[in-house]
Image 1 (cartoon, rainbow, N blue to C red):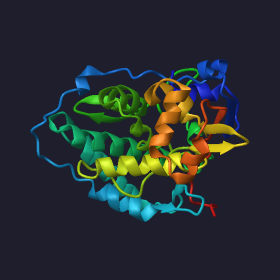
Image 2: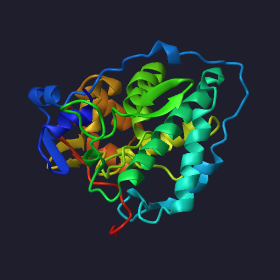
Image 3: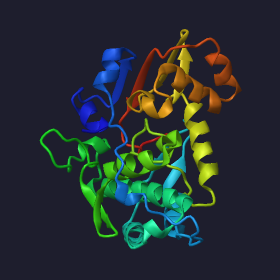
Image 4: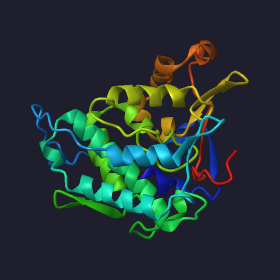
Length: 284
């Protein structure tokens, strides 16, 4: 069971707000990283580069920054040529012998594949209010598309959950993964307007972390309490395993204003997440 299935039992509201209590942490727990050993293979001496030019161009064309600090996707305007380009890119990635690439190229590969597949599955079902409405995963209580096999890589069928929880999180053990993979929701860290690559990986990961942490949907101090994204509750183990670990992570990427507000803060008062689709249509 993954984080979205659990959220599906909590009601249909797009924005979910929960007090930071032990019971809430248990209810909204997320899967631990579950290593799929088959994907540990890599070649540290490889200098081969994976071409993400098509994805880069699509992101620049169809993803836009908005005044509220949230990037949105022009799903409605993503025409036939854009769909063909996206499918061609996904097919090209599926044909890459990724196990023979170095770690940096692999990381960029999996993040871009995850994000491209997410956009593709939304386009397949658009218009929808949110990605959780795309109930194509197997299982009676499943919610959303995350458990459905969407791509075959090196002869193995993979789901979005496989890529996130069985490949990226357990192999790299880097909390910045959560700022890189995008689940097409307003509450999610931004889908960046540039494709990840082996060469820009560290820059984009740090940029994603700083942008999200310093946005109110990432962390906000009000009335003396710290309110954070539910990502820090669902995946608390990736951020130090405790409130203090999450707060230390926030301080690492906090700008001057947030850093000053975090002074003296020792616990998290609550968390929330907006599952509304990150759709450019109708956005200000």
